[in-house]
Image 1 (cartoon, helix red, strand yellow):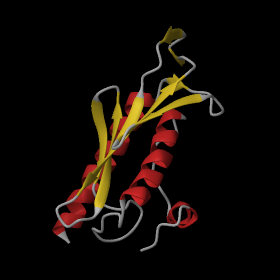
Image 2: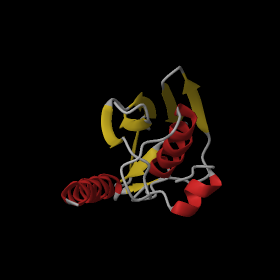
Image 3: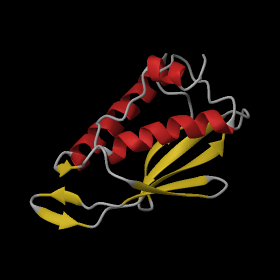
Image 4: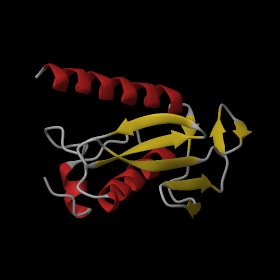
Length: 138
């Protein structure tokens, strides 16, 4: 119970931090994105620039990496440039502390969360319905 409360607090803190960080940015939801992949890291670089306070600034690369938990399940980290902004060792949106069954499941969810960040959808949470559409089961 206490661990769940702490995890909830950490996630709320992350979402508030991300919201504050991106609150001034305006991003086109239909922009083209370059995809670069290697074995464990998937990078998405926005082709357009991000507008903030009427000044154009260079788009920041966003990528994720997949990791294996001690129990053999999988999780993911999401980075903006080289700064980790989300570390997700468990399946988001589900009760409990279960990680993803395989690397492919973690990649699917990480890609959706990353797209939400690129599109400035804050917080970049995942619902049970989205997990079902991705084929992720409890």
